[in-house]
Length: 140
Image (cartoon, rainbow, N blue to C red):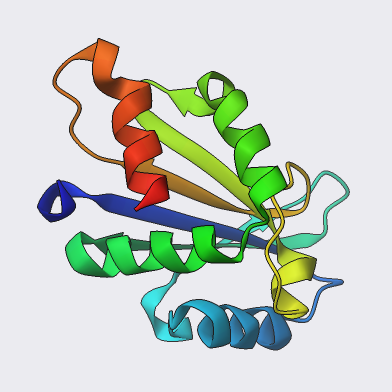
């Protein structure tokens, strides 16, 4: 499955946030360089600049990223995530959001708002195996 694993990481950076601090923290925790992100400039609701940064990780690198993320999430949060895992699927992709501010503090917490969005995709050939396959991936 690792050969077909793909992770998309999205980070929204508002003009009030320190881009360098966020990207340096992402590099320190996950070894994703700033130049690996594509950048899209957007205009917010009140005309403020918003940067949308995206990158894709595949195969072994995606597996290593997942291991780094899951190893730093508390057991309580992972258990809650697994309990509610059905709420985190869109089609056959699993979504996980982690706090940007906590990444700066070198910790990881699952959070829905002001978060780094992680989309995990891998082939699942039987819909009935969807939850099991993703649980196995996150526990490995």
